[in-house]
Image 1 (cartoon, rainbow, N blue to C red):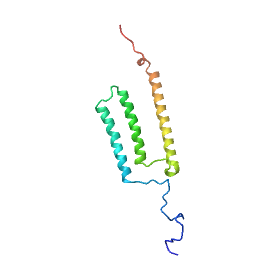
Image 2: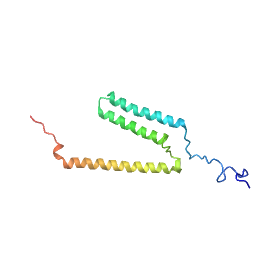
Image 3: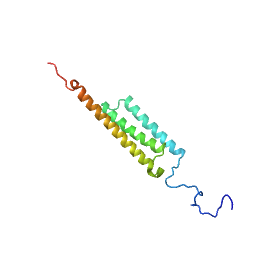
Image 4: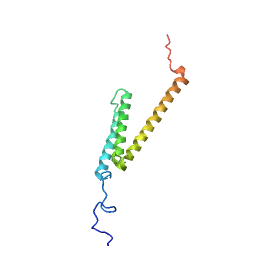
Length: 131
């Protein structure tokens, strides 16, 4: 029997290319698309801040946060190659778990800081007007 036996079916273990639906196909076009989207999503916030497009800084901050979230998704898809099918869905499950932990940590931190500010600095909360 030879080292490469063509009588075995292509789906036999150790034969064939093993390209299933869960494999990630990496191409130069995907990287270029991710790079172009990343550059655009980086240039827009610089333009928004430097050009003072919005009158209120809170509007600018919310737009910057939204563009940052979109850029995170672009990086996860085009550079980290995360999707619901990779590694049998375990990558997506780990990502969701991480996001839940980050939200819990950020929410708890903001809650503690708000309550520390209101309980430790009571004189700073009220403003008195002088006649």
